[in-house]
Length: 196
Image 1 (cartoon, rainbow, N blue to C red):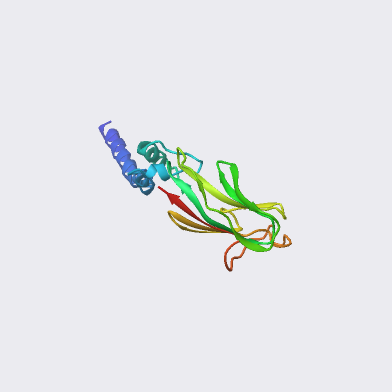
Image 2: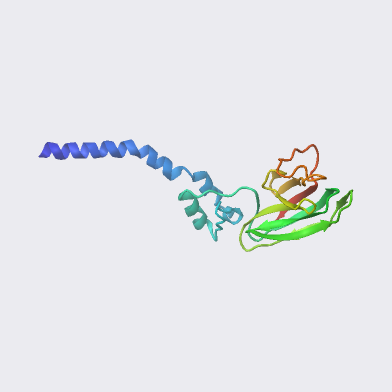
């Protein structure tokens, strides 16, 4: 009887030791993400499902339970975003704006005219929680909308600055459904700056 108990304890210890490294890895797997929550970092983070965080503890808990953070153009809570020198370069009638949580807001447009036109700067925010922003270009000739997170866009990120270029559908809509290739700026070119 004593030998059976001894064997059960030894087997239990062997199982625990064998699983110990994987338990430690699982617990520490998101330590970098949890670290990003520290020192007010939670205010500039959004979960991939749109989750926002009221404090460091909520953010750390989210990361510790396997949550991942969204990438893209994020405006931290209480900050603003400036659309600097939004410029249209095309003949098509175009409009541009931004989308947050599925709601789109137009910031400017122009009619069918073959020229380069720079519109006034625009500022959005501040917002009570961090928000993920998508910039869009609407090609009104082709009836298409292209986002900064899609195949017609190029975003060069160097937070707090983002250079966004988006291509339209082409002069006769020949690029509808075809990924854009950039040789210069897009048909919409705008620099975004996150302001504290």
